[in-house]
Length: 210
Ligand SMILES: N[C@@H](CCC(=O)N[C@@H](CS)C(=O)NCC(=O)O)C(=O)O
Image (cartoon, rainbow, N blue to C red):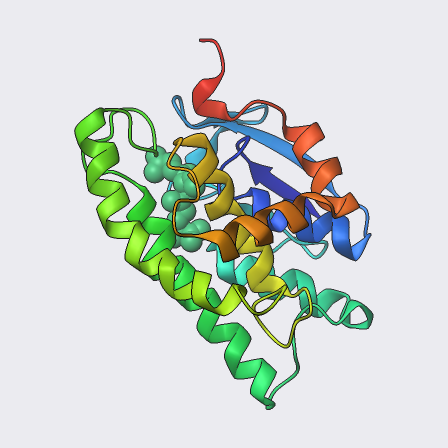
């Protein structure tokens, strides 16, 4: 499998799951400013012009972070990273994946952004914080009394949520009134797969020297 990614972007979540499932994979870095990769025009890979994209072993190109996460989990069912239809966990996990994709992921992106996908001015940061804080608070309440989102076991939505707690750090929002999320973030950083991925990706793409 091949993951098209940008350092520190939402592609971090499938990257973590690739490490968790332990299958061979290849990384292809995408330059989000020029929309290019080592093979040329990235829009030829993903016409939606964003990361992540997963190229599967049989040559499919899968996009949309939550869908890629589900795909990776079902390729390695022995790891139990996503439940099989139709259990309580099955629906819970998909509700969280959808919630993170629609309520959090896009709200972290400022409408005033320029050439980047995270807020880059004081005003846009404030706007983003006002949007994400109540939505994060919902998850915070759950994680005050649990280590992971579903059934107290690591599963696909946790990898996605870690992208968001990592962005909280990057934007220097911190974890004020979000002790459950802070505990979650610290615990995720203890996972060997997460440590390998953070070391591999290095500095987030938007912070890299031009
Ligand atoms: N709906 C997409 C959103 C992906 C997305 O927004 N990716 C960001 C990085 S986190 C990106 O590549 N942005 C580049 C751009 O919009 O120019 C998904 O869920 O995968």
